[in-house]
Length: 266
Image 1 (cartoon, rainbow, N blue to C red):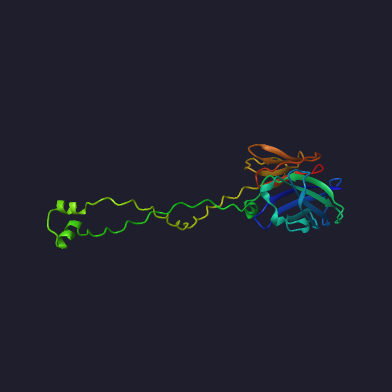
Image 2: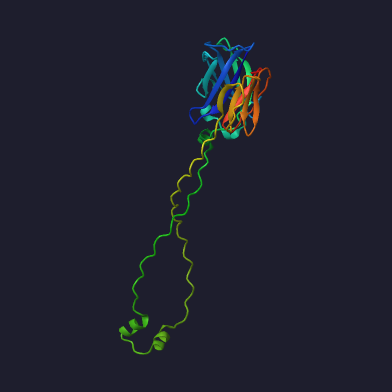
């Protein structure tokens, strides 16, 4: 049995989810330059929900015990990462491992994916963008020339008399009302408006490394490991604990684009 301090961040489609972990044995010693087996399962609805996708990896730890994998690009066990409907969440990532590099996996922990990248969500949503704004009105046409009056035409045709005589000559019994004409066909649909501007990317955790004391002027999402007290902190207006040596916990993301958790005391 072994443990890991790990983090996962979403990347744009189709890269998937970047996952990083420091691998330790059951007494806390870092496993360096050693092949390990990892299994990732994406669970739907709850930490004990059905797995919609499973895959495996066989990375080798660095001299510091670090492994890096991309969830969605491993050896597929079941499911299809590209067809996951991220709008039908919540979803949870269950991480299992075998320190010998085999497939006798032990579950390290399960953590809810608190956010989904826009590109992965939009890839399957099928929702069209909003209609564009109405275009400007066209310019007015040129006025036509005045035509000859009907009275002048009547005189031209050889008739004599005043305009009153002309008006009386036009008066006759009213004819029956004609039938209503058919409705004309509907005009063509105008062109779609341009797409709106994409929103800006969220901010991820900024890891400062191992320090003996807290930084004097931290920024939002700055995080570090305090070697004096054996605790990892993140700055969110104040220093919040995200991991502590010797304490089992499942932490939480510091913003919508970062997933952090600890397992078996690390």
